Length: 208
Image 1 (tube, rainbow, N blue to C red):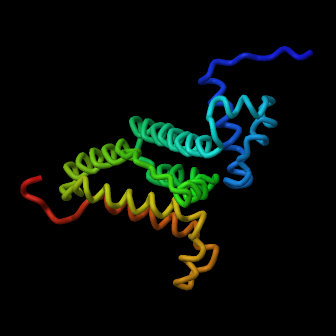
Image 2 (image 1 turned 120 degrees about the vertical axis):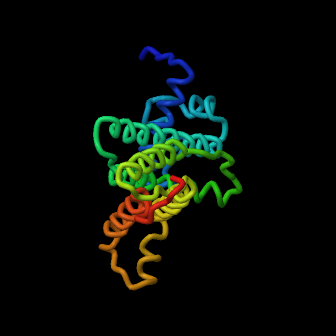
Image 3 (image 1 turned 180 degrees about the vertical axis):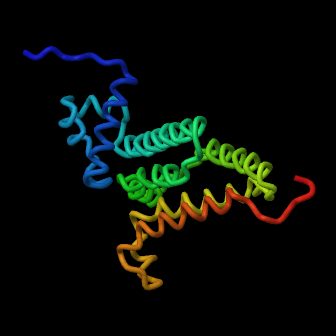
């Protein structure tokens, strides 16, 4: 008889969420079923339900898990800026990659079921670092730095665009006559838009 492995609750929850994340990436929210997760990690259905209650609660936890994973990845991108130039392309692509792994469809499915995300500030660290870099760069070049709100607005627009891309990106591009191959060019456009915002204005501000 196989020896039953007893795990700490936090370790068990993380294992369940990691398995759920793989199923989400492979088949969307419909693939995230308690039985499939249990089979993936070799536990009973009851063990999964013990940690998360209902499937709805599991899906909500999975969405928060994705958000925490994104924050960690973005923190890593920002950390690399300490010893080198800021990598805006890496930042944009890290943000885009999470939603391509099924989290856009998961967020929409939960929203349609009545769930609402009341959290805020997931990208605060990104905004603060971009604003600090912009002020430092503009002080050295004589340009007028963007306001923090200008960076907030750009990041909010970028976040909305990449979140909706897996669901409706193709439809939006076809509405203006762009083909399917324009997806990468659109991401490049967002990188350049963010770069332009951070670069500031050539108008000299006497009070800056």
